[in-house]
Amino acid sequence: MLLCAAHLGGVDNVQARDRARSTKFDNPGIVAPLPPRRPVELTLGRPEQASTPTARTTPAPAEPEGLIGPPACFATFFERGGIALPAASESGSGACTIAEPVTFRAISMPDGSKTELDSAITVTCAFAVEILDWVREDLPGIVAREDGKLTRLAGVGGHACRPRNGVAGAQISEHATGNALDLFGLRLADGRTVSLVATDTATRSLRESLKTSACARFRTVLGPGSDPSHKDHLHLDMRQRPRDYKICQWNIE
Ligand SMILES: [Zn+2]
Image (cartoon, rainbow, N blue to C red; front, side, top):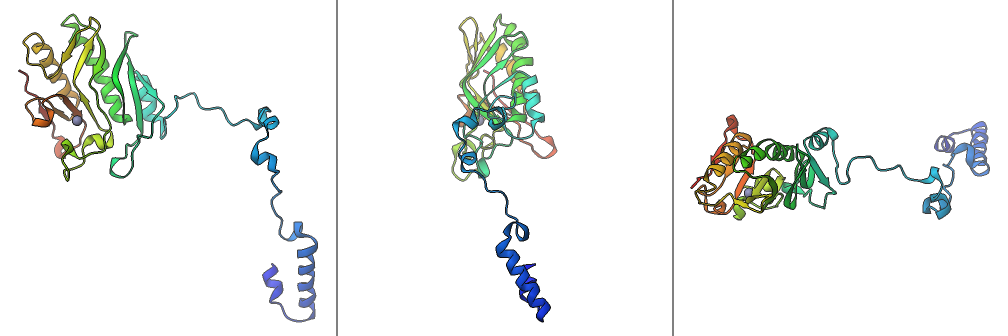
């Protein structure tokens, strides 16, 4: 409107222009209404305002801190016994970004006990659910055959931004996208630690069962005998391959 008045010709239009100018300068609130000035104290949040209910920020949702993204998988994560921790800055970036990351260090078991992880891991929510299902549904029965009760996953590793097997130039590892778990052993309530890379006959049957269940659930299982970098731990991931090809390489001795 002001621009138009400036380009009009003739007396009437000059008057219109002058009216517009007059309006502009005399009644700024009509021609170009400005938003009401924000009181400084609102911006700064004076203590007395912060103490009133209307000035409080919206309470945090009931979900545990640190979870971002669509809630569908997170609901499943909690239903399957996941106990989330506030996420660190581990969601990564670039080729090492984790989609829907969850960080956890403990799993609520069907019998009400907890299975803890040696250290917290951050993985995709979908992969976390795979871990939860394996730990809750398969492991208790397997260790029970040896009169054991699972209490801890020992020597765990999750997210790591690195190429496969740490070899420079190699394809990016499933660990980089939070789609893999490394595991050394299982700790039992009676104090035993079952090493997955052991070669003793006492735990052979248990390790055979673990291999069978792991290879049924995960798309990649690499343990001792697969390659030198997996001689001292078990690697599990859900890497998608053409025709749903799976790798199950773990020589039980
Ligand atoms: Zn690994």
